[in-house]
Image (cartoon, rainbow, N blue to C red; front, side, top):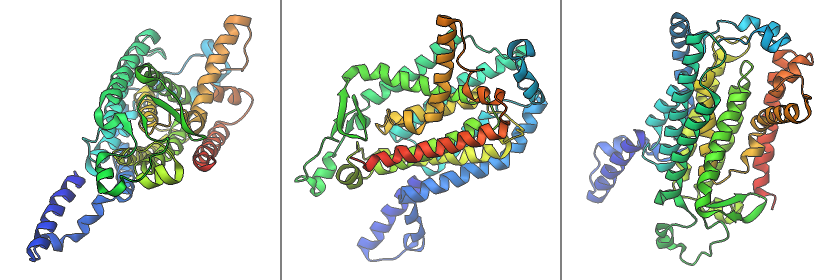
Length: 404
């Protein structure tokens, strides 16, 4: 919305300057601020935060009135954990609608919503959020911790992820990373493109200034795996008050920074030697909106939580982060920056694999945050320490940009 207002103002301002007559456009010269991604990204984060805080109490009251309390697994299922989390019974879930709504509204106001990177991330987030909403609704309706069957959920996730992956692969503005014809026409014809001039099918990593491999059309299933994997990893992390929310903040903030850098030609190609696309910088606005929305949600989701995001929020956030990692061409870096999500998912995989193969458990319980709870850590200790790890991993991931 605001970029469209800026475009209208800029045309009027240029017309006035050409005619030598100063009219209304000169009086509204402050609108020039809206051309800067940094300004709009900061505003998007602030507005998303304010929307979450302002509408949070209303959303919570509405969820309580609808009796959408979070079902907690029984003592027969989780034994001692039921004692630790017994007080959470009845806490309203589906709070992810607050995050999704704040992000989409803020993004619509401060970004260019038709930007292909914005569009694919926002649509993936909304679609995954709808799937999570259906899962949460089934849990609440049946008063059980089991929602949609795993097979159905994975099937729908794959459909959403493959749709996003095909869009990313076939959309012309997205499929090329390097100098654009317009940049060459503007005087960069003599600039020698480095190995960062890659296609959408290439897989890169900051330590290597050339693509590791180019999968061509096979990148489509790879993209789908990234989106589905990230979505489920965030879902597994969402087991303690504020754990997934706080971890999302550090990951989204890191990728907002990466998107901004990747959108600037000389910073990306000459200094950092990372994949560049002139449209990608706009994605920073969406990701900062996600950061602001999570800060606002954390206001109510911190221990003791007044509301849970549920699958509505966790699947949506995971889908958005996975898509953002693909858009910036830093899919592998997500393993480091989103290391807490990876750790949570791997703990479940290892636990299930070990029990099926050896009939022995590696952890007291998975995901791993419950293992530390059963070791005697207070819930707040687990949450804050995982936040610290997430921040350190995000800083380490960003530091890799300039090692080689």
